[in-house]
Length: 177
Image (cartoon, rainbow, N blue to C red; front, side, top):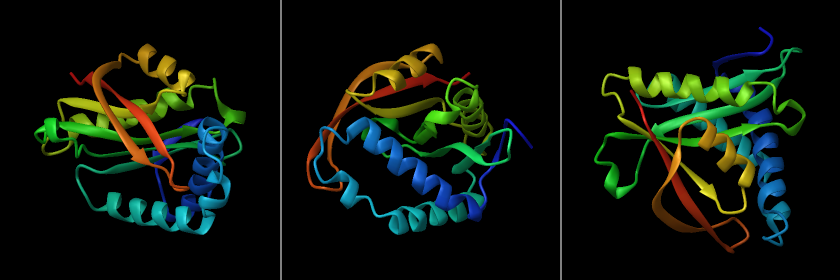
């Protein structure tokens, strides 16, 4: 189905890994020497295969693939319950949202976000909020989220990226209605 979104299937995992690796390198590669070497494609593929498997049988988890006109994976998104201490079980987290540069500005990101938001609202324990952690460098993601009704909510965190350097992020969130 061209230009569509569907639940991810196991065979999507290698495309997810390649897309995530390329996206991380584009956003963080200049700031994190050694990132390319640290992002193991086989490890990323395994991680996404496990996430897709988990989401297929769990109510509050979802992984989606965006398909381009040629049927290839153009992007992906994943939903999980937020682990942030202030979420109190009421927030879902958009743990991933990536669209390949060749397929950006074609509506894939919006379709993926809509699918995730619908899953967040329709689970047996629906989420009231949707959050997403964004690096300060990712101005394009911030612009996209702002256009979708998200805003920086004041929460910040620092995490250790694969090569060992620290990365600062801001949480962006939106109320689901």
